[in-house]
Structure formats: C-alpha cells, structure tokens
Image (cartoon, rainbow, N blue to C red; front, side, top):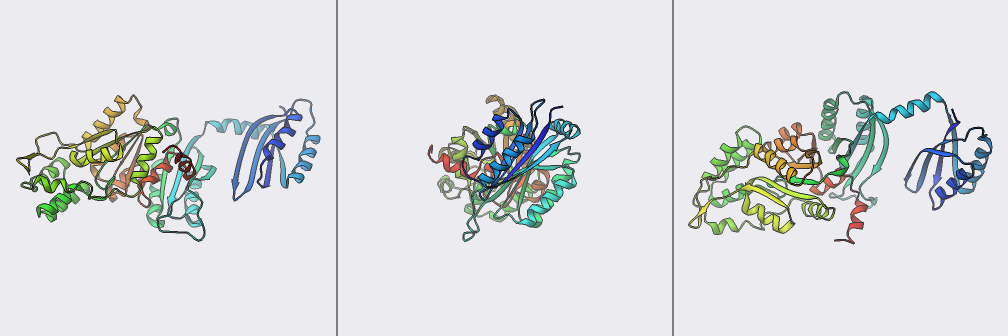
Length: 409
C-alpha cells in the first residue's frame, strides 16, 4: 500500500491558503483522497488525506509543509494512516447518513449538549456542523431572532423512532425544535410544498371567525377543537359547524378577506419557494373563498378546499359537495405529485390538525407546524418555536442565501 497521511492545518483564515498548500502538494505529485474545511469566527480547520507516490519519501514534503505553515501562521499536524484504518474509512462510505436541524430563537451549549448526547447514545457520529442562520450580534438578541445549526451525522441507526421520541422530549423541555431527516437524493431535490390553510398559513380558523359573525362562536369552536384533537370524525364535525352558519349574509362572509393575518414568515417562505422554482399547494378543510384569496395574494399553484354554499345572498348551512377531509388531502397530494411527475418523496406537507396527518405521513417530509400535541407526537417532524419561513432551513437554505436572492426578487 502507498503511504497515506492525514494532514491537519489550523489557524487564522485568510485568502490564498488553499492555493499555496495545494501548489506544494502538486510539486510532490501527491493524490488527494479526501479534503474538508471549516471556518468558525475566521479560524480555519483544514484536513487533507493524501497518498504519497510509490517509492517516494514523505519526509521532504513534511518539512516543506512545516516551513510553509509557519509562513502562513498555521499549525500543522501529520498522522500516518495504516492499512486497517484506511480500509475502515473506505467501508464507512456505506453508512447511513442523516441531517439533524436544531432551531430556536437562540441556541445554547446545553441544548447542543443534549442533542449531541442523544446522537452518541444511538451510535451515530457527527461528521459536520454548520450554522444556517445569520450571524447574531451580542447586542441584538431579540425575541424574533432565528438561530439554526445543521448537523450531518452518520452510522447505523437501529432505533430511529426511539431517537425521534427523545428529540421530541428535548424540544418540549428546552424550547427548541429538532428535525431529523435521512439524507437521500430526494431530500436534496424537494419540488412541492403543500399546506393546510387555517392556523398554518393564516393566524386562525376561518370557520371560527364566521361563527363569531353568526353568533354561534362557542358551539363552533368547541366542535373545531374536538375535531382537531381527533375526537370527532372530520366530515361529521364539518357538517355540524357549517349548519350553525345558516343565514349568515354573504356580505359578512366577504368581510373576512384580508382581515385574518398570515402566519409569521408565510409570505417570506412562499416568495422564496417561488424564486427557487418550487410548486405550492393549499389542501384545506376550510373554504375555497378564502383559499383562492390566498392563492391570488401569494401565487399558490394549486388550491383544494370546501365550497361554502351561498344562495340568495345567505349561507345555506348545507354541504352538497365532497368534503376535503384528511383522507382526501392525502389523495389530492398524490394527484398533484403525479401531475407534476415527481416522487411523493419530493413533497413536503405542512399542517397543524389531526385531519392533516394522512398527508403528513404520505409526504416525503411531513411537518406538524405549531400543532396540537396529538399531531406533534404522530408526525415525523414538528416545528413550534419559529415562523413558517424556518421551513427553509429544513431544505438547506441559509440566511445568507436569501440575501443573494434579493437581487432576483
């Protein structure tokens, strides 16, 4: 076997370091087997795994790199890699790989320690850590700040469900969110985002606001809450609630348009997804009149919801079309994926209620957003502490990427 050496450089980062070092390696005709670099607070950590040509002595190269490192203000360390270690490295390329995203208003050492402990407990190794959020000023830790780090880990995960449960417990205790994704070609090539509407894209439930206008708020809110908790079958609960709206003037219904604000971060998320070429959909157990209003405002590609029947200028209280319930949402999601000619693994679905679970479980990535406890516990992913635009971190978008996108918006 040729001589294999791991070289590690560390020190103050500056332009031209890679150029200088690789030029020296080129003079000695070495082969670079692996390379990795990280910069934290302008401090460089650079590793190169190199192979020395057969019959060549590595001594002169090491001496040359020692002198060069001093000139560049770097520390250098050489580690010889034996055949067993090299073979182990080759075999490790077949390990499972995962992306763990930690999100919060700020991220503390305790939070990272707890996450790292769970990773280690399950036999996984952290290969890389990267900050996706923007830099935070020490003088500007505000209540609406975003903090996000992405950990790339590898190993053989034998109990993913147990690990997710442990992450969920930590999120509830330490007020952070943790997303755990298996790395795959589909994870890097999402194409469609599908959203529930009420309490996901907008701050509230349209039917509850209509109930206030009709003077039946208490009855409708109780039925809504029961349905979202999964205690009443959705179609039955929907019929009961709509029946209570009978006689509400159409003019009052139209007053709602524009009066219910978007959820924090919704507009930024949709605008960014459109710039990146994603398709978007609203799959709602709410009403089409409001969903179409959002479609026009945000540029949503697909809308499926329930028609609020109005005759002679008033709400009839009847439901004469097929109700969009949980099963229908999943069916519609698959139809849209088929129409777009994409795998369901390339779909991200977002919702907050029990009737969203079928589409959350079907999609390649299902996210319970500011959801009820039952939904948080049942979905693979849950976000409860940041705005809707924090979903961008889960597809690997950094804050600095968004600054660059401003030139195209």
